[in-house]
Image (cartoon, rainbow, N blue to C red; front, top):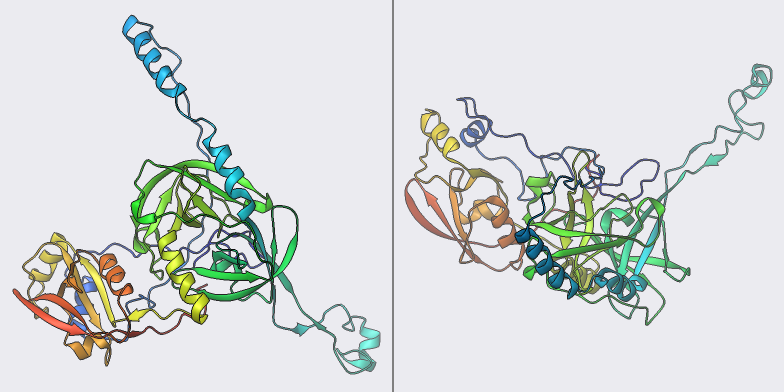
Length: 436
């Protein structure tokens, strides 16, 4: 996959992202056009059919200041004014946030026992004794060895009942989970539930009244605001980094997480393997996101799950232990002027497109809710549940917030005409394992 940024066990499952889809080629043999002309196949809205893998890491950047500055009266006046402004700013706000939030941030150790295999240490290696016992021990029973792999991530306490939020990839498949508090105590933890589609998990410990974190509103953040990350990167507990929110609304397609239904927060606060599941905070110490992934070969590109999304999933996990995601049964591509021209010039395409932008339905799963509702390949989705949509990510986000089993209106553009349909989402097929 994908590899999220957790301190890796021996199989290095530490990051979650996968490489983005290749750009469309606009030749007559355009793969999208072939898809549109060939008919429908079983492919879900989750895009489960296209998952690849990519590796990630971290690069530090060093800022250099100019050395040749010509003094002037005007410049001196500007510096004086700036100094007076800066003197009124609380330059210790990061320290205050750390003091406030630090006790609620924990280290999560996950142990995974790999399937049993024949032991090698007691095999009969000497050819002389092998004549008597073959490749087995004299007792006729080979010892069994089990390999235990260790992984480390971060998390934070969300209430006084001992519930902790972290990434699903930190604890997925773990046979034992322990939680280490800032005061040094180590407590056994239990995974209450996890959701691979959003990479959110809830861990519980049997300790009440732990320091908990204050929730912010990720819908209100803007690029340029302060961002503070606390976690346990590379095994270095209680590490603090700071930066800004450098982007919002990053789609899974944009960052290579094509199998995730998340609109990510981008930050340049340093995030490293082991930060997974730790909080991303604003300047007042409210959590606005959960750190989850980085891109190797880039500078200052870390990504966090918005806290509103994480808590929506967490509440479902706490209530039922699982999350059901709405499923329509379509595969979509973003319409561009180039793709529009390619469609117009392809004699094998039996529909027409009269708009330059939108979400083009490439495939419809047979017997899916989309097929039942009458959605066809070549339709351009214009709105979902009354909300206008301009790309596939907006369609996914609109569908994700709908209720399974409830009919929702969808408007599509088909061969130059607007058509209104009603579709009833069902529960999406589960993702049982992360892609390799």
